Amino acid sequence: MHFNFDFSARQILFTLTFAAQLVLLVVLLGRDRARRYPWFTASVALSALQLMAEVLLTGRMATLPLKEILFTLADLGVIVGLLVVVEVARRAFAGAQRSQWIVNGAGLLLVAAGLVVVWAPWPVWKQLVANPATAALNIMLLVAAPGDSPTVFLGVDKGDLFLNLLLVQLGLLVVLFGRRFKAGWRSHAQMIAIGLSTAAIAWLAVQAAWQSLAINAHLLPSAEQEHFLALGTRLLNANSVVYLAVLVWWIAWLWLDEPGTAKTAAAETAPE
Image (cartoon, one colour):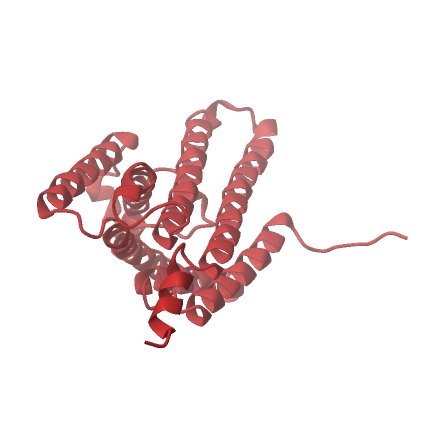
């Protein structure tokens, strides 16, 4: 007996990712984690909305309004992502002195901004606004691009690049120094930070690989162009697989209580 599955790898990954996002939202809301991490919860919900819009609207509406919707959601994702960085940092490093916040925050921003400047060439402003009909979209693309778009791995979307560089640094700081404050091992802040940094590292690695391929693409003979596009699709799939694994990580760890939470709750409810 032969089974015929008319689903591509991308469709399967989309379905699994969307299902995992919904389960994570149920965990965040049902286990009362959303109250402590509202912006992280909002980022998961926005990511699910963006994925659903991308799947349901692609091929079913005109290209220009579709891009306006997807680019708007992508730009909102970057803004919410920056708020997530602040939220996780505040939870992880509660009790840190103001001077430590200023010095480390400035250091993170400078490193991320410096890498964004040198990572890939910036588009020429005159080219961005040359066509009034698409000028706004080009500027929006400079901030972020839909996650399934190949342009997301061409260094065009500087906002996404800046955010992911911040997430990698945040994860490193939480792992190295979180124990001194409020983000010891198995704490929700550390688990969220590890997941965010892991997804960011995968995104940056795939972006670097895609850029390397794109630089040499014009040198390939026409017969190998199809192989180049297939390799790009596999890179996108690899990035989606890592993100799916991160979602499962968050589901598992955010379902569990933080160490010491059960003892604290028992002490509060114990009769005097």
